[in-house]
Amino acid sequence: MITRETLGHIARAGREAAAAASATLDGFVMPSRTRQHLLQAQRELLLAVRSFVDSALEEMGEKPPKARRKPALRKIRVKGR
Image 1: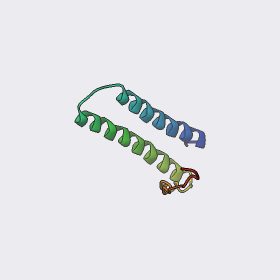
Image 2: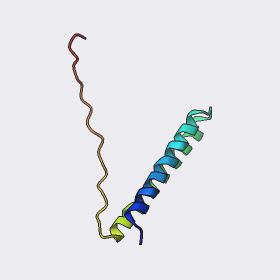
Image 3: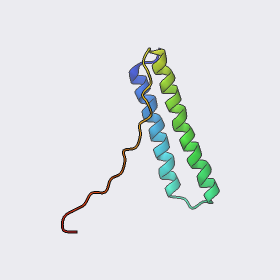
Image 4: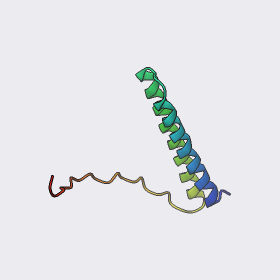
């Protein structure tokens, strides 16, 4: 059985791997097609980690969290500008 702590480590590992890939991409000049493939691979890695964590949560008898929506942007007026 997978513990909640293990799930947390797996999720963090996925995020760290994606962040490392993103940081690496920033340092190289490459064709846009190559960059697109690498970004898609990063996305697939995160989706794989999410799928694994969701299935482990279901196995533990918990519902996986719903996908979070990005908060809506709103314009804020600043006095004096």
